[in-house]
Length: 213
Image 1: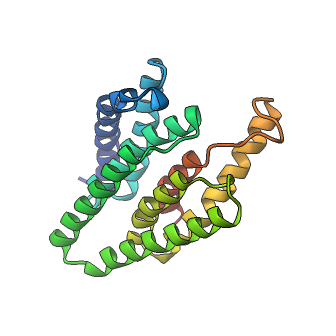
Image 2: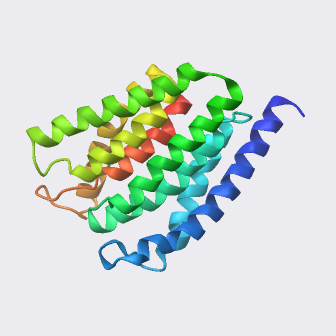
């Protein structure tokens, strides 16, 4: 199979896996009223996860780290949906997300022997967590503690792929958030005093950055 066909196959397979994963994971949001989502959002969340999975499958085709990044597509889509609906990123989902990411990236490291990547991933997670924590303390209410905790997970994924990807994610999240706010303002969905969910921009940056790098 030629390289392009192989990438297409990985992208298609990853999209299917992410769609199924997000469909199965959706009820996790319904366990608490404060995180519950409208039933009609289930298909939307699964489709978004599938799109993210396809992009990551294309970029990481053949990589041992791909399963870890499919977890990013699934958990990221669910957390983004909850954040849009409730402006909340629950610990009960971020905790297992982080544990799963570390476990899958560790397995990828054991398979490849690339411990440097895992070290960069852990350093990226700690550093992005620290940056968001400082921003949250400087401007309370602008960035929530849920965003800070999610930054640790996103930084792990970004750092694992290298310093360039980490930098793209750091800057990209803020640029995407500004772009989303402008679009919502133009559509009159929010006002100048409204707060926009930051989680979706963080997840989107983590998914898109590998394409740029």
